[in-house]
Length: 114
Length: 115
Image 1 (cartoon, each protein chain N blue to C red):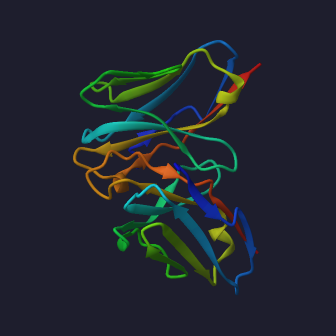
Image 2 (image 1 turned 90 degrees about the vertical axis):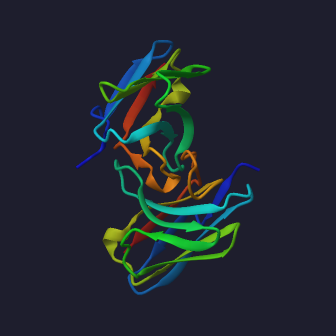
Image 3 (image 1 turned 180 degrees about the vertical axis):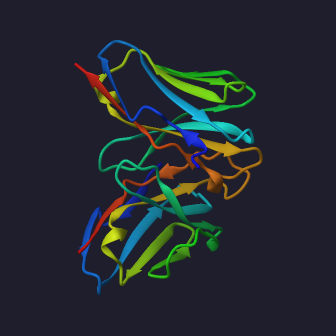
């Protein structure tokens, strides 16, 4: 049973527009959420995170929104750039958890078209 | 230095071979991890070392043998692997083994092909 779900395996967006990547979770004990970006033949790179005490965290072009009641988070990229084309993994950690307990979603392939 | 370095980047081996994957970090991180990732799947945790001691073994077959010679190095020894073990093997590190917030730093991975 997948506790972290990314239901869209792929997403295509025009350069300059907004990319919205979605993630749902089922475990109500998750209280810290992360997004990782992965290029082909490279390891995942930490992108942005959010604690459950917040509903929004922003870092440059990247914003993560958390809706705890809906157990849903999303990553917004504005404006999207061709270099953003990569696989994006959502990940979650439970309360008082450690990095060992990181649970990954299955990933969404984002393609930004020039 | 904010890198996790993995060697080799690519490895092809037969089922009777013995080989090793190597991982190195100089960020002073005290936890190091091995993950396995198949195509279009999320990374799966294999092993965790905390302060150079093996703390987690996620029921990994004994043909995979981890080793942590010191706080900066992590090896994965491979012996008698099967073709289904072909995958991208990712090393990661984090500042704290426990109570941290999961900001793992990943290496680029070692692409393993077992013939």
